[in-house]
Length: 310
Length: 268
Image 1 (cartoon, one colour):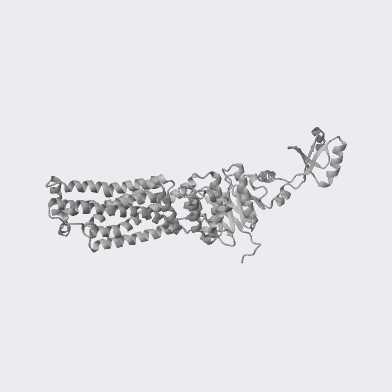
Image 2 (cartoon, each protein chain N blue to C red; image 1 turned 120 degrees about the horizontal axis):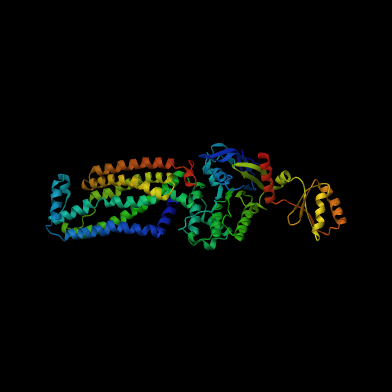
């Protein structure tokens, strides 16, 4: 029996092979219920294959997959009824209008015309529904794809590079819409290789590489795991005065990156460091702890795994 | 039916699809019959009429008795209208349906729309049957409309010399209603399986012609036989064709795999 604490999606030792290409190799990860899970990884990491296995569009060679407590291999129809998918560069029947495409999806997912209108309204595409999709811009197609994916109010939403090919403004708008869907309690899996895209909306991150899940967890947990030492950003009117930081006891590392990023052994040393800098003539303008961005975390995780592999 | 509905709507909105379709049906059902029948009707005791008369004389009694007309020209017109042009009722729908069907599944993959279908709750058998219906309907519809026009032309050009409207004959009715649909379905059931296996629409069209050609040859012979001898044999041929079509469709519907709709197939 499924409890509320069960993850929306669970992959256990899943392997998928295409000929000589091992797309997924013993992949393990969970996507928590009601959270935004970001599958992060370079092209070829296996993100799209993961989405396709989740709905049962592909069948795994080995391992076990559970989606909403169901098995896509045997309960595929039920899984697909309860999930929505946005593919990278979503495709439509270009000769049909936006409305005809939505209506087709509504028939397939047993949704009403009213639900189709609601979905179009939610993604601000309803004014273009009378036009043939062949004339849509990339942004309009993405909005229509999102509307199509939520037409049946799915419990799980799988978004594979949903901002691919969009201009920054449209991409931001799409990400806001995804955040809005997440706020409604839906379980969302977002595949991306764009780190800034996942920033701010990821509740749970799965770092994928060569078909493996290299690391997984909430961003804060990953930060404390991969970047355990506190980093403080210093800046000053007379920046040369900050060079002395490298010689202070308790400072592990110093890097210039729009301010000095000083990695400390522990935060207790910070008051002493500030006092010594001031005594040394530094006119400080900025002292603040670094909250690692997903990008910084990603590259730190990649570096850590490369070292492990070596 | 959602799948078939969307495909049909898409086809009929596409001018580069239905304009050639109408031209083809118009050429075979209207233009060629009109000119050939008009020419024969205006000839008297020509070599062509003599030859047709000789051929009719050599046919089995059951067939030659079916040829109506008091004069050699009337009888020649009847032979051309009823027997000689019968195969067009096979060629037109098979060609149209094969063109649509060959692109049906591989086209979804090439456009990327197959990704949506693969993730949808539609069963693969529903997708297959939807594609089959959407491929069969345009060909059969063109044939039905074209045949109706053909009937009018035959009755207007040949009818006066035979004492009034006589077309369609019983054999043609059996052919159009009972025999042709299963032959189209047989061809499509094979073409759709090819469409699911090949990697491009161009390859699908090449492969479908290999399937369509022998079926056209067989059905050409069957059509001529049914029209010439419209008895129980025509009904039996149709019944057998329906059974074969049913078996092939059931087999095709059960063998379509969801990954064939995606940009990759499992063997790659």
